[in-house]
Image (cartoon, rainbow over all chains, first blue to last red; front, side, top):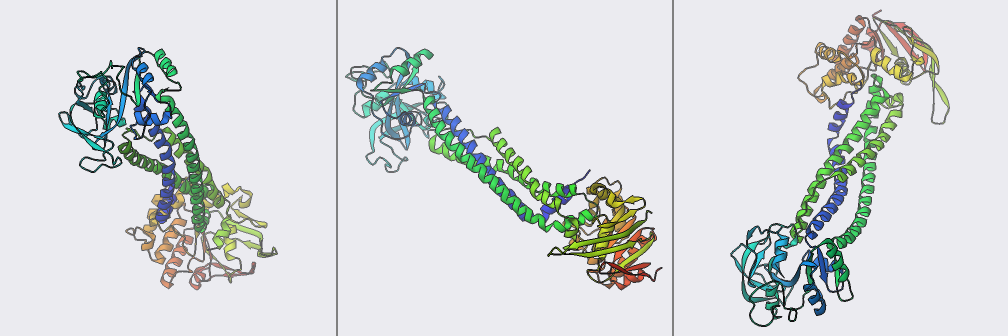
Length: 411
Length: 227
């Protein structure tokens, strides 16, 4: 039984710098390739989870992707208001378990302040708040799980986007502070969505701060949430609808897909996005794989040159009784050892890379991203190792075929 | 000990222009066991080539090489490798040791070529007998004479009956050459067939017979001082 490993290990030690460089290059290439697929999967999973609680979104006609980004992912941007007639019809629709108007445009210390109704707050929190209670008056708020405030704190809402507490208004130079103090009475359970960073207030507060009324007719507001006074309810940019039944969900979506409204399940819009991302991923993964194969070929060319330095030593070993198979085994094990080590290390590089990127992305977007190196990445590394195993035969075969005496004579 | 014998061995190489020139020409060579047989001659006379042919590394164009009843070049290459592993120990001018391995690991390297019962014990004993300091961990820590002794231990890993040495003293000083000559004489005294391609007067003086090659021809066969 031949045992090439003592010599393989000796060659690796003799050329430690070159060997480590080869391994790192391969690891980097594998890491980038694997990170692309892992990151895309994490983004897909995280965004799908974020949209999970938003059954049906109804808004003014326009881009569904824009509306999805505003409502689910709380991205800043202008949104058209629903027409009054459509809004009144929607708020009165009995096929919905609840219709939650969404009010945007305010903030506190860079955190979005969202106007809505208690039913959506409970729904987002899994029917149970992590702390405190739901808001019951216009001047109370429930904060997201990642909000810097605590239950019992008070804050004042800024109209527009304020970058951070104590700083000047950033993006919205027309931002201004409302006078009204709002008290935090509850905290949402973590949702893994940008809503974890938000402060939720009654929609009535949003309307009142913008001097649009209360949604409950004239006079002081005595209660919050539906039913609203349909004759005086102010305009809303969008509503999250919880259909009462599955059939109602499709019925509502169909009914509000008109020239004056748009309605969609977030999942269907995400699928469009995923298809787009998927195409890009395929292209990028293909490019990454091609780069990896080219890199492995380059490394093997380097190994071939290295092995040429060992041509004479191999000839000596042959003179000492080593078979051609032994020489082939040494050259192949050396090449494949580097490729396999690089591929394995590449998975660790990918895990680290994806962890860092996901962390940054989560902080920026609020979307919780679970990043794992899974079978697709293992398969990628395994595929490269398999390709490497075949390509590693090339330098091995060249040494295998080299006449012994010719190499001995070059001594 | 099996006897090694070349009969009517001829070999020609092609030069860069394609013209063939004789490297060995009808060589009959029969070194005897228990003796040092020297092969001498100017550079390019075919000394090393003859050793390669004897070792089963280079098939001749004509002629045979036999070890006892075995016709080497009637064997497949794989069988010749196995035969060489069991029957031939090679010693080179520049030792060709693996510098990253310890002396012991170098001496036992042939054990990684195939089944090798007892090789490690034998190599350990040989290194001790040959006076290679056990405390040296790398080849770089050895003198040239010590390196050549490690190469000798490696050549003896499988306890071969035939030792082929190609200019083994060319890179050694006088003292180291004297040590090597004594070692070769000791190997011959154990009954091994020792064939040495050399110009070295010390080794030639220790040889029992010297074959002189010139341009691939056997120009003379001289009885050595040791005969």
